[in-house]
Amino acid sequence: WEGRGIKSGYSQDFLDEYAERWITHDPFMTPAAHRLLAERGVVTLRELHPERDPAHRAFLDGFLTPHGISDKVSMIIDAGAEGVVYVGAVVRGALTVPARDVAVMRALSRHLAPHATLQLARDRASAAACADLGLTSREREVAELAAQGLTNLQIARRLFVGVDTVKKHLSRALAKTNAAS
Image 1: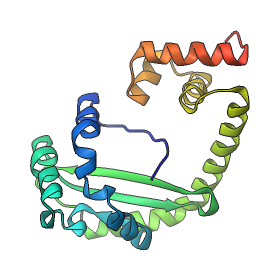
Image 2 (image 1 turned 90 degrees about the vertical axis):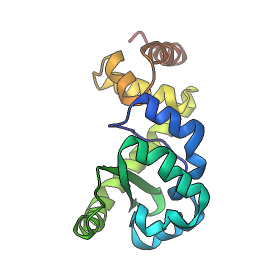
Image 3 (image 1 turned 45 degrees about the vertical axis):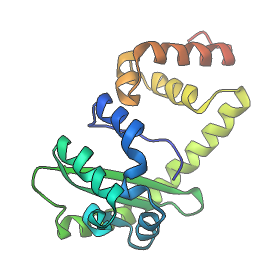
């Protein structure tokens, strides 16, 4: 499950804590979860039975519960030869993901597949073009967002990095492409 993504709705502290301490305990990061996602397309945390594994139980008790998260759901959108798009969401409060919502997500993933295929193909072509220019994937990502008219602050918030980091990536991208703006 490699790739890039947009993480929205989460604080930087939350993401940092997850990456530094909890990612290896996340039940969704296991081969069994990946197989189940490939079979079903949509899987909830409860379907992974995290209470059966001490590390997964620690993830629940030490990370999710203190953040008010009662359930998670993940979905893959199959884009054929282009790859997959992974979507994950959390549920806050004393709720679980309703079966109806899981069914809606499965239907949605089928409807989004053609769009995901097209977008991933465009992304692959863009990445190849940028690789020829010597841009890293992050420099390309920042440059594309700037080209869409986002400010440095908006880019920083979208990518969960600092404004200074955005400026460094933009400076490098401009230098490598010999562009003035």
